[in-house]
Length: 306
Image (cartoon, rainbow, N blue to C red; front, side, top):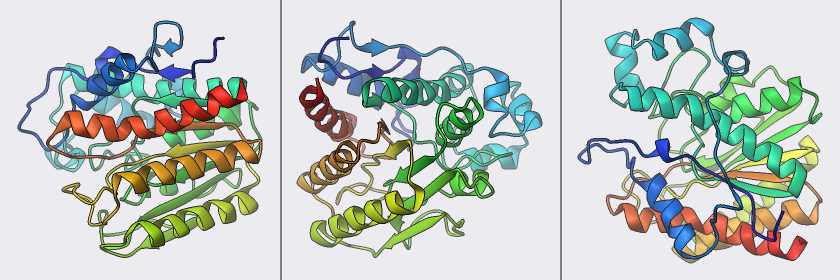
């Protein structure tokens, strides 16, 4: 392995999609192309995941729900809650992305740090989709690593602006999987789940207060969970101009958050796998460049380890 950080991506993450829809489906390909132009993503360090096995997916999801989604048999109300129009493209990407996060975690365990250029589908519950999330890649990955005895304890550190309610709900009875969500208190979902550690951020919170909450929250979560790996959801919908955010975090604040989270994991000697989480800017190129921040910061740390 060269000194380039392991990255995980698949071209199907950005399939043909209605540009008028709220969800920015093109951002995944734009992110990869941006990282390739910067020399961070190459053919030598980019891994392409395939479809997740049904038995792996069923570690975190109801088999009947898996079947109904895959065969476009969800009820109209379930489809509305999902928030995305069903299509073959959606089915294909939804069955690959969880495997992408699992592969990223496996690479992180081997190399110390790895980044998935997708993932963070933390609103997906055991038996239903919600908030643009079909299958919960974080819960699938945590359950799989534990079931395969690859690790004894997992910390999911979720910094998307929205609470990771699906992750918390799926893993609520798993003492070996610790969920920590740092989210805006007045944002989606209206009815919050109970994570192992919830850190609520007030509307319009700025950089300094937010960074203190994140840094102190991570240290507390690490002490409580003593993990063998951290799954880090680096959501950029905390950005001050994100249409679904409600916080007042600058670009510099996002970069400082990611640098501190990743550095803390490295200093504790804990492998860390990143996913990109939420971000909903209509300017998808600018959004992709915000998602690239965690990869850029991870790449700097990875180079220092090799």
